[in-house]
Length: 122
Image 1 (cartoon, rainbow, N blue to C red):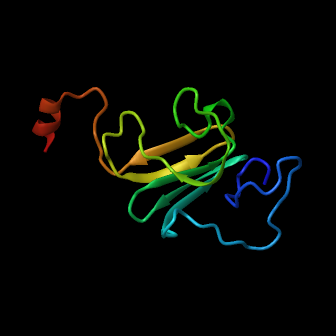
Image 2: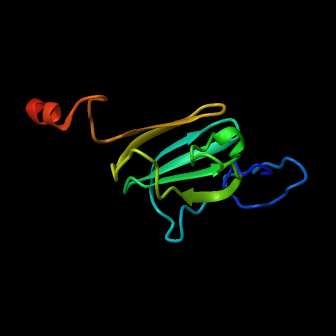
């Protein structure tokens, strides 16, 4: 599609187009297995079984969550290698809204808690 939301690559840049039949989308060079998929109005997100996040579609306004100044359209599933604040935590779930992307990690931690407080809870 013109905004990449189907992840099929840059098919047409002048007008909207759709995949009218089920079409395989390659996730990475090795075609990774999908654990979770979420679709927004103009973008999509995938989590692989290994916990890797892939995003594609329209990046207007930062809806892909790639960081300040990164608003490009991604026409194919693109791995997200770095998200500030994640510190290597495995991504458990993702949800795409109209113009947002929200994710949760498998590691549960209390926001604002010190490392000492976390150790006491274990």
